Length: 181
Image (cartoon, rainbow, N blue to C red; front, side, top):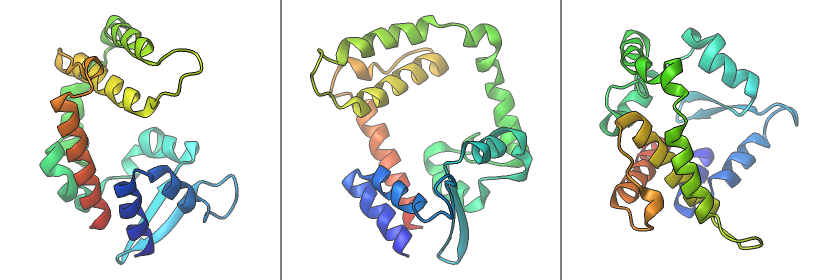
């Protein structure tokens, strides 16, 4: 339960990185960034190892899945989508999204260039301190909605963007639900 309590506390304090570093400090070696835990009687494996991530996402994809608990925790927010499903349902979701990632579509850099220019303009002057994490969050949200949905939510244009605020809050609450079980 120590791991769950640490993750929930870190989420509430916006100190996730500190908790991930603590978790990976318990791996067997300095280079190995994979840790196995037993959380609530369930075996959990966490990894930041590039080779393991490549295996899960590409070379051995069929050997891994998100599982029903993940689906149950996240389906209210993300639906029965590519992000929450496995097997045949995942494959069908992937096929629906495939046209968005065709070579001619991915090479459409205009969308990314437009939002990158906005981002660069907000970074600040030389020597000025800037919270880049909020800017990267808004940049990601703007490019993703523009590319995938055909219209940006323009969260880089204002500090008080309702969509970005609500989306962030839903993610935060869902993350707490998933971490607390």
